[in-house]
Length: 364
Length: 252
Ligand SMILES: Nc1ncnc2c1ncn2[C@@H]1O[C@H](COP(=O)(O)OP(=O)(O)OP(=O)(O)O)[C@@H](O)[C@H]1O
Ligand SMILES: [Mg+2]
Image 1 (spheres, rainbow over the protein chains, first blue to last red):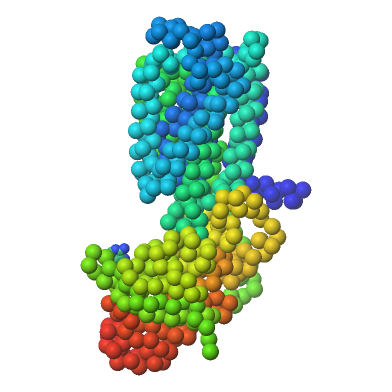
Image 2 (cartoon, each protein chain N blue to C red):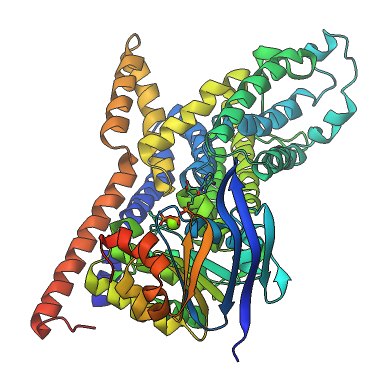
């Protein structure tokens, strides 16, 4: 019993939040209406997206302002999959494309499209990362390049209309109807997404604890120093970018069926900066913060817009400003900080009492 | 007869015409503590930048175990040639615990593959514990590096360098900003490392230099001004004039 109490004292506060959240999410469909479950399902996809950026930004210190590009690559693969099920869709034929282009054929199977939706952003991150990180481009330049990328990618998708339906985006996406069968129901799909979210979260936890994760943190803290311990920081940065890209792609793959559509609104600068704000509010570099921030802001956004149709954006903006201004570590970051300080103060007190009991501290 | 680990020949570097290090010859004996002193801006840290690959020399050789390492990249000099360096002023990973700081520096797990297979085995834990005791930070192991006092941060970085298991350890002003007691403790730590490791130490505190030095080299305006035991150097009239007097306004 004492042992359990002891270990509870040393458990970080965010682990309790994780468990409460997990139970809440498992029970959620039992306590609300179906359209709320559908909303939560969408936000869970955002959670995966936020976790992917937290590895890159929160842990490694590389702020991407174009992360929605990777998310969009995943999302579009699934979107296209359902467009080409029965021959070339109208947006293609309208532009004179009567046959499905050969490079779209592998997307016809939803499972294959899902895999491609994860692999493509990962490979893209690998190529981009190899260029950026192997050269001397540092810090803020990565951010600027990714920002430019978000704009370019969005323009590109809009411009190649006969392949992507331009800014209209792709509609009518099914929740993984495989082999012409029925698509998954909304509730089963919610649980599928929740299950994958849990797996992703566990993976991120493992990553953060692993040595690769610690190297990532050291890159964030002091990259120049790390090289003098014999590390090649650029190799690690490329690896982490690839992992992050794959997870962002996965988020997109799950998101498109959850909303049954994807448009260029989901892939540009606005979408990329939104996820940065979610993480900033929740607190970066501890995973729980990314989850909490994403869920709170997205729910706040939709509930506020339901109740205060005209000025909800003002309210939300003001609240975000206050949070980021007064608790720069984010909600969960602040709690962790508080816990750490209390623990250290207690420890110092114990040490002090110990030495006071023994008498004067031994001189060297 | 002792053996030479590091032999620097005619080493120079200039930054847009300014000769920060010029025509330096230097020999460091294996297992010994070689102290480098000299006024501010003499080129001491720059000389260390050259040895550790941070700066590329314009001329000269850095023979390490007989191999010229001049101009090689820092990661390679650290891992392949086993040269560890403590920078001037604490240079640690601030928002990581003391324990994690040492752990990251551990030798042998710096490639991606090794990083994936790394486990905190009993052997690893023992090793980290030993280092933490050596630098007197075992009780502070769960503190963040930023929470440490200045002197403790210096020790932490020394610990990180030890964790690298280097053959040659470079310490750039390890006792800067420390109290007299801390400085003395640091001196004892450094002396413990000699023998197993070879050390180059840059320092301004003359009591500290006297405490640890086997050999002292004096740099001045990028050049070697004098070399010898602490007693010899202290008596050298040139050294007294350009350095020792400047420091204290009087000779020793
Ligand atoms: N990368 C660089 N570019 C330009 N000038 C440099 C560079 N590195 C060092 N210097 C110059 O070289 C000179 C020697 O500097 P260095 O840091 O080696 O001195 P030091 O002996 O370590 O002095 P201190 O005791 O103050 O640490 C200084 O004038 C410095 O400004
Ligand atoms: Mg210096």
